[in-house]
Image (cartoon, rainbow, N blue to C red; front, side, top):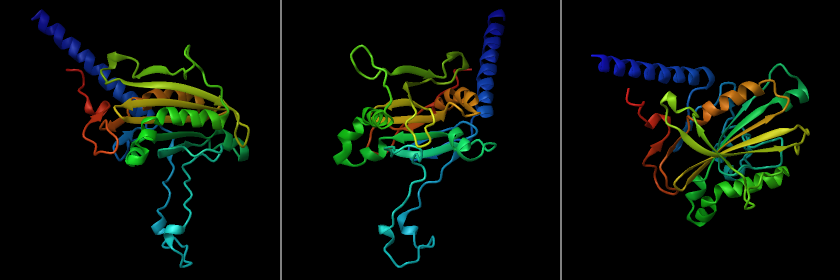
Length: 260
């Protein structure tokens, strides 16, 4: 009886920790965003930036000049407008604005979240080699455009920091492993000091980057930094191959709750 009681109490304690952690996620993260083969819960405060309108809908949207819709230039509002950079493999983007600020101050306080992947690039057989180097190529493009000082390791390579989310295994949620790096720069249109916090996730051939951009004057910066680790643990990715249909899923939704 004593041994059974101990097992019961341990399972009860595990359950409390598990649901306590889920409560923390729900208090700090928005509803799950889902795209083809990938999903994530962005931090509360972020608003999804709409995807660009398809060219074939240009006439219906009011263009009305009789031109071929396929020839219409489509502006992707998800791409950064504060630096001369088009993010490769962009899947989705969010922004967090400070609505109590005005004019330039408001622009400087806006934070961004970008979700990038090599999955679409890898669907083109001619770009397969490029897709397999997605992490390296994207970091190189970021650092060159931002003129940022990239930390180097002893061998001269990029000094990436391995991180696991959640960091605490006692909450009985599956851990996801990232390689992370932060690029600090002031090379932007409004000369705001911004941090580009890059989190690289790999699953077989699939490479994903969760990128957060925030300024040193953002009023919500402290809250955001507390929510980023919670966001990163909710990433799910389908499959481990590029250019083929997804077959498996990794991440919190595919894991068991620790046996309690």
